[in-house]
Amino acid sequence: MLDSHATSARIRGGAPSVAVFSIGAIEQHSIHLPLCTDWYQVREVSRRVAQELGALLVPALPYSMSQCHGPAPGTVWLRPETLALVVRDVVLSLRAQGIRRIVLINGHGGNFVLDPVIRELNLAYSDLMVIRPPFEGGFNAVDLFEHGDVDSHAGEVETSLMLVIRPDLVKAKRLDHVPAVGREFFDYVFLDRWAPDGVTGIATAASAEKGRKALAVSAERLVRTVRETFSALESLKSECPEGGAG
Amino acid sequence: MLCTWENTTREVAIAEPEIALLPVATTEMQGQHLPVGSKCFILDAISRRVGETLPCSTYLLPTLPLGTSGLHLGTPGTVALGWETLASVVRDLVESLLAQRISKVAVLVGLGDASGGAAWPSDNFIVKTAVRQLNYDHQELQAIWVQPFRAAWTDLLDIFETADKEVHAGEVITSVMLHLAPDLVGEDRSDHVPAAGPELLNYAPFARVCPGGVWGCPSLASAQKGAQAFHAAVRHTANYIVSTFDSLAPMKTCQGAGERRSGDA
Image (cartoon, chains in turn orange, yellow):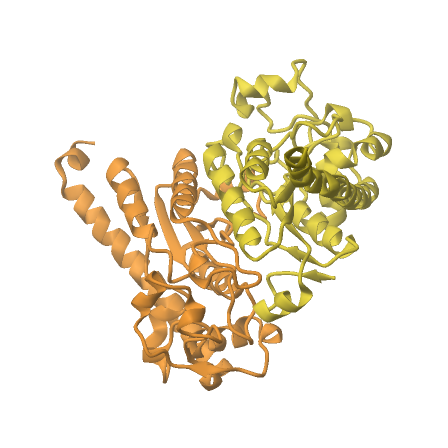
């Protein structure tokens, strides 16, 4: 796998046809998880996916749309339009060096601007295939957890993953909270209004064993989705008249 | 005291950081011999040491690995942001720090070079514009920018033979990489110093001006010079940050006081 530890010449030699770009977040994760939880999780799973695909791994973006946490100490955010610009620039940089299959892996559930951006890119540049298989911080394997249905932030899922990735950064004391309102409340008020401890889910149910299994399944599902999506797109593109002529 | 992204929100709250550090690097072709992440790796290491050195409670943000590397666009591994994108990223991050009452922010911009003078950055230029605009937009903010190699330029001229001729992937950056990560530095180090000035890079892609990807003399690099330069960059950057905030604080206070005085008169 090629990443930013390689020289430009080595990347040229490897001629990767796929690149993986992942998006983290720096935001409050209750009393027991570090600010970098989303970033470290997405880096870990992206490395596994890029390895499996033989892809170029672009350095992960550490920050994204975390304003939903408000001014919680240490939390920093990008506005949606800024994240959109970053994704566009990264995709076009990769296209400029001849890489046209690009996999975005999103580590933070609140990055809703990604879909409009990739849709626009794919429609504007017919040679590009920019795809976003689901990940969102392990939530593409949420079915493996006991309390996945009430989990959205710093709960059983994220805590279990961090117990595998960086157990030294996970504090022993954890709080559980099941909000009385739905996740659409992220759209209306800062999280601390409906989840005062910054957690939604059952953090005390987390375990490294669950995390290990979820990470493996999550990466596996990502790889499978990427392969299926690219192959479906290829046959769609080969069916179109311009594709056949070219 | 230094807190980082590896702390919890509560730990940052307790530390009550007075200053935040935001490092902004690039991921771009660095000659035949250096990894595309070189500037990011070096800026990461310098920023952490600077954070540990500062005499006040400090919050270090993760290094933005991407910057305005447009002149290397198309070379394998180069991933560039447009200038308006980088300006927006810096604005959003500084404003989110301000929202949690961290009003002193130092943006560490790329690495800079030893060409002297602190008024004009040599990488990620737009950060200068973004910082200036942020200070206009927010009275309570003290945002500054600093380039570690630029801050240490007098030392760099002593340590290196060709620091003043280096624009890209030369003696300075290669030496610092030999100090920090020798395993990542290749042997193919050919020197190239074009006759033209670096302003040529405003007009033509880098690969046309320097086909080997180097503007400087990497053949003269050594780990020992790199260690000296690294420590000089940390020391001068920390000093610059402390002295600049010291100079700035009374000026920002005077702004308000001056207005009040003129009102009284």
